[in-house]
Each structure stands twice: as structure tokens, then as C-alpha cells.
Length: 215
Ligand SMILES: [Mg+2]
Image 1 (cartoon, protein in one colour):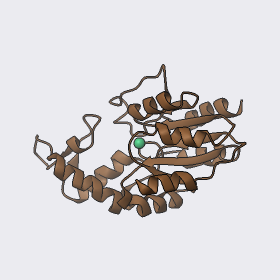
Image 2: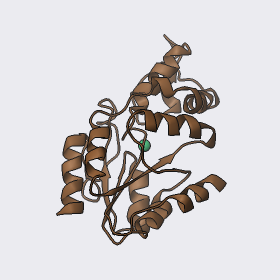
Image 3: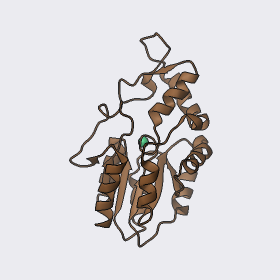
Image 4: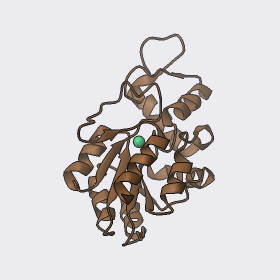
């Protein structure tokens, strides 16, 4: 928790520029695909048949998923050791690089503290060299704080409906976009497109963000 406030306080936002607040997993990074590779290297398999994480890991050939504790342990290990397995979402780096010429960009990710270094290194390596705020829990309050630092408009991008709802509740002036990078998760992800536009391709998402921020 301590870091969360340090990150937020330390994060500088251009007070005159529009702001893009963006999630990592399933938005900048192909989380499910990477986690599946990681889980596979540990002798298990990830079956994407529901929008969940720990309930999707199986021993090969078994029909009962791995128990929650073992699943959570793999998940925790992935944040520390799985950087190599994680691939960037297609088009994300180019889109943000383009938007960042006219807007501030802040990466707002929920990750365990032990994954901080791996995550920071991964982001830099893949062209996402923007201020990083590691958060835990609802993203509405930190998004509201960041957006309050600029007079320009702000947008928020996440794959998870509860996070989009949190931002809508805490900072309704921030325009929300939902992006789900994994093709298998797309039909399973809960959405509310009337409240948060759902756009799963970065070139299209970039255009919609630009229209909102620069029009
Ligand atoms: Mg995410």
C-alpha cells in the first residue's frame, strides 16, 4: 500500500495536456496467453472457458481445475518470473507512442508488489516507457487523482468491467474504454458498452481516444 501512494504522489502529469490512463494486463500485455505459456512450463494447462484465472488451471487430462491456493501460487510466481512469457498486445505500443505526442500517458496497473521490478522492466523493454502507478483494489480513486492534475480531458482503458464501473462512479468525467486483447476472452468478458465503449483493436481504440481527447 505504501508504494501505491508513493507512485501516485511521484507521478507527474502535464497540467495542460489531455491524459491517457491505461491498464496493463489484457490491454498492453497479452496476459492470458503469457500466463498460459508459464503455466504450461510448470506442467499444467490453462483452459480459457470462463472469465476467471485461478479456476482455469488444470492438470493435463483432468476435468477438475487446480485448487485456488495452488492456482494463486502460480499467479504470484508469474508476476515475478513470467516476464519472458508475456507478449505485448498487438498495436498497443505504436498507438500509445502516437497518442503520447499530444497527451500524457500514465500506466495504472494492479500487480503484487513483488512483481514491481519485472513489470517495470517489461514495460520499458516493450516500448511502454511511461510513468507507472502500481495499485491494488479499485482504480476509481487513483484515476480521479491523476485526472485532477490536468485541466485537459482524460480517458481510462481497462479490460475489467468492475474497474470501469469504479472510475465511472468516482470520476464520471473520465471517458472509459474497455479493451480485451485476448480473442478467447473477448466473448466471455462482461461489458456494458452503453457506459464504457468496448473496442478490442488498438488502431480503432487509438482513433476513438484521439477523437475524444483532441477533437
Ligand atoms: Mg487488466
